[in-house]
Image (cartoon, rainbow, N blue to C red; front, side):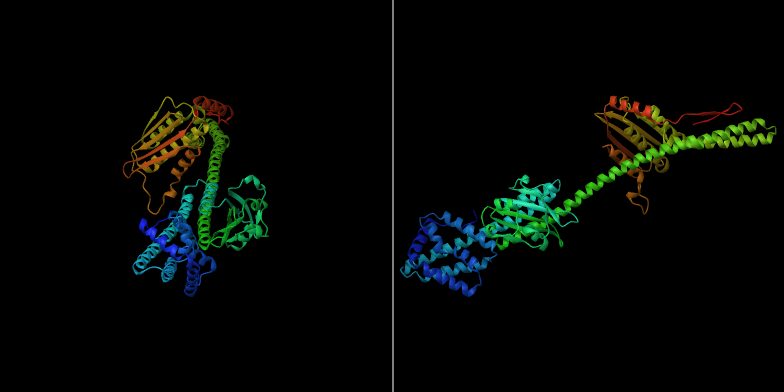
Length: 558
């Protein structure tokens, strides 16, 4: 119920008395009012008829028995219609003034004192009518604002495009009290639209392959022209229309879903009786469609971005796998070709040294053997970093301890390793990822942190493995002119762990070191051990070879 001005019982009785006295003159009063309105306004017959419903002749038929409630409901209904017709409230006030003035001229049966009371009663009725109509205007505008805000809320809260379409269609049908609704979306780079959301319609009633071509039928014409359209009475229309819609609705309204000048679909609603829209209803439906079109475009963009992110993650995972395979291939070639060739060279040098008699020549050969040994040792280290045998053969814990030992040996950084007894063996991909994280973290410690000590902790609890690598170095500082996007080491760590469903947290501040926290979900120890046994049986193990020189000395191991 809209706002209304309260009427005292005495005022109500006097209004009824005045109306009863004027009833025989109602035809003359209505005719005079129409002439007056026609002289000042250029309203069409439809608008004039709605305004006339606010006058005393119509009102008296509703409150003649003393009950004013139906009268105010009547004012609220026709006030909303006037709002939909976009009639200015000043015109409404003017129309009521004309009606009151004409009624006053016909109060000839009242004496002077009684006439003054009658005039006051007419003025009270006019004021109450205007307040009720103004309240209806407010209700109508509030409903419009609520509808548009609801579409915005749907855009923010919808989980995906389909949820957004369903929500928008429910808002639209509810706002206009429609019995059915339908959204047709245009396929990308195509002139074909397909039904994607339904209200009051069973989707199975449409053929699965139903498509609407631009320019075809009622909705196709809306999509082609980019303008709203209405079938106020389907019975009298002879255009192309889906037979199911003809049986479900008596009237159809349709608006295009447009972004800029591009039509992406059509929004349709239907009614169970013939119904012609008012200007405000047409504009509100167009506003809902415009707001919805923007939301749909954003939802489509977000879905495309999510799909692209999934593809990027898949590609990244593939690249990491390819990288690991390539490392194994390179390490195998270094071992099988370069390494073995160096071993043969060392063997020949040993044989040459044995056959020489000159002291100088033997010294030169021994120097050369030393260089070859250093080269072999360097290649061994490269092979170990590319595809560490210790990880494959002895597991993650031994591999981490070896990395820590190598760091201490090569840089002097004190490395402390604390690994819980319950960690055990993990799935091969998990062990490989965690090992690479430790390897990258210790590489950063050696190269950038200027740390004196680093702590590595790993534990397993509640189906997760937690890894912490913390140093006492200078912390992570952004180099001049560089952005965070260039820290590829940390990006690689996040990518590896993210592929396993884990999380990475980096805590660092200037002068207070860096802490890398990693958590990874893991399966049971029994399943992981089974996978590891399969890996060990099928892996292309790189054999370990120790070269014995001709003079009986041993060389570096491959």
